[in-house]
Image: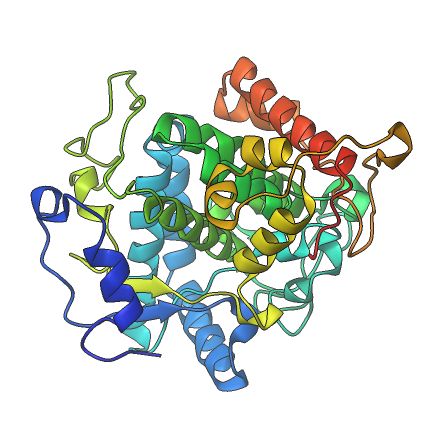
Length: 392
C-alpha cells in the first residue's frame, strides 16, 4: 500500500495551495506517503495482513497499552479543542506500532455515514470483518477479527459489544448533515463540538461494550472510527483555507494555539496539523464503494433539488459553487415528516442522540450538547420539508 516517494499530483496541489503554509509549517515534508483506505475496499490479502498484525499487537499488549493511555488522559482529550489533534496523533501512533510488525500495515477508516440508516446491517459488522454484537450475559463477541479475544485492561474480560436499542441501533448522522457541518463551521470551537457531540458520540454509544468506556481502544472499531473523524477534519482543513485553524479552549480552560502541547505527547499541536509533513505521512483514499465520490454525488443532488434558501443556509459552499435553483414555496402536502427506518432514496431520519450517562461520563456542557441536537433536528426538518431525497 505504500505509494511513490512523492505525493500524487492531486495531493501536491491540495497541500501547496493552502496559504501561509511556509509561515506555519515547521515539520519536514514526508519523503513518502501511504494511503489509508476505506475498510471495505481492502483486498483479501490486505485484510489478512491487517488481521495478522492486530492479532500480534493484542498478543504483545498493545491493545491494553492504548486503552490505558486513552483512559488515563480521558478528561484532557474530550470536550475541548485537544480532541481532533490528540486523536490524530493517537491513531498515527497506533499505526506506527503496527508498521513495526509489517511495513505495509495501514489503519483503514470506516465511512460510517454510508451505513447510517441501519448501522447494525453494515457489512463491516459481520464475521468477515470486525464482527457483530456480543452474545450471552457478558456480551462477548464470538466472530470477526477480535472474536473470542480476552482483553487485559482494565482487567481480564471477554471482548464485548452491546449494540444500542436492544441490538438494533437507530440511525446515525447522515453524510448530508456532516457535510453541512464541514461547510458551515469556520472555527475549531465550532467544528469540535459539532462532530464530537454528534457522529463521534453516537458511534461509541451504539457499538457499546468497551467502545462505550474510557478504554474504548480495546475495540479496533475505535481506530476505524477515529481515522474517519480525522479524515473529516482533514476535509474541513483543506476547504476554505482552514489548514492552520486552531482555536477554542484547552483542557485547562486556557486558549489553545498551534504552540499548545498535545496531551500526553508533549509536542506542539502544529506538528500534527498538516498531513504530508513530520510524522503525519499519510493521506486518505476517497470512498470507492459508490463508484463516484460521495460528496460530489450529494452536492449534485442538493443543488438540483433544494430551494435556494435551504441550500444557502445549510450548504453555503455548495450554493456558491453549484448555483442553487430558484427558491420556491412548497404546499403543506409536500412536507415530509422524518421517521426512523427510512429506506434508501427517501428522506433523512432523525439521528440517535448521546445518552445522559455518556454526557456525564465526559463532563460535557449540556447546553452545548442540546445545541448540537437541536441543530441536527432542525436540519432534518429543513431537508425533509424541502422534499429532499438522499442518494445514500
